[in-house]
Image 1 (spheres, rainbow, N blue to C red):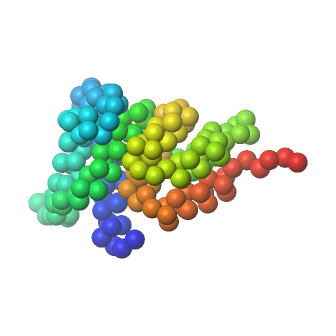
Image 2 (cartoon, one colour):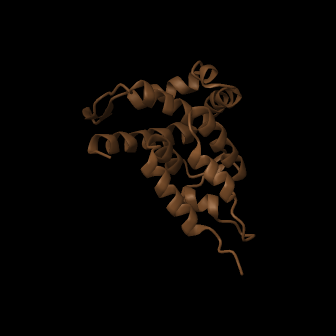
Length: 181
């Protein structure tokens, strides 16, 4: 990943965390997230004001003390679609569980079983196309009790490629409870 992509990924993570957790207008944001949650497709979700507020936040310039720290940017169509799917997924999240990496959240369970089964995890890694990926992540978010590491989910979604899937697999299997016998 080159420096520009890394910078954009970090910027998107920062904005997403602000968009998700800004308590100043919690009631309004909760309504926007509910609209995104009810959207049955990406076509329906792209008509939701909550997504466009997030998109504008990502594309806006970052000005600190009158100095432009980050110029405005225009996302590519692929990046906009990724941000849309991310907004749809985050609308299902109740709380940011930032004290534990995403792969560990999926692999760990107090009962000695992974919260996300190996089969379901492999389906996520093999998901081709946005619909399959969205469906797989929705199920995983539900299995994790709607508490997920938002920064990790953002990074994984934003950089979804073979390298990201491989790193996620390494982390998941490293934390998977060992089978006895």
